[in-house]
Length: 287
Image (cartoon, rainbow, N blue to C red; front, side, top):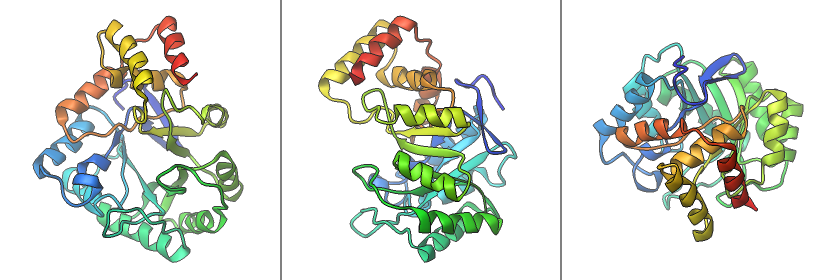
């Protein structure tokens, strides 16, 4: 574990991962469909992430579909013992580039086996059940779907489980069925609807993994963030990533990029030191 990475480490069940991870979604082609424009460049990003000490890679077999998992396997297999790959199931891709849900038991079993095959492993480290839709979490029971994944975990195909795009009620429902090690939801400086959930999970030793850490800002909010960034001689994304690491020790980052240079910029930016005054000003963005 390279503790020089910003944020240090966190434990997902019995798996120790760097809090600063890497999200592989952007390695696929436009709209997360098809192969990357620069195949060798995509492999270089993955290899550089591991060389820099990142031990947490987030992916899904639906990305491409199958593209990012195959790139991960080509770049990194056989995997270092310290590297842990987190994947998602519960949605597929259609010909229009949509993400229709696929949470019936047969679809979930097929998705788990597809991930095993494309990643080239016998056991998946962590599998998140993707819920909701493109607009965010949606109410409804996850019992049948999560029970299916819990059964696959008992069969030895999955080490740990999590949920993605979930409501607090769905998180609790999942926990009543079996243990979870992470929740992956949309969250950033401006959209902090999960503040209470983050704190609850921190008390339980469960990771919270925000996606879209800089997405959805209005011009006013972007101005406020940019003002802090300018004062610190940093980029807005650096401030946003650094804020997330300070927000709670159970927050894990998975920023994505298809550029080695941008990867290194993200790592350096997340190490930005924020003062109490900076935090006070940034917290007003959500107000």
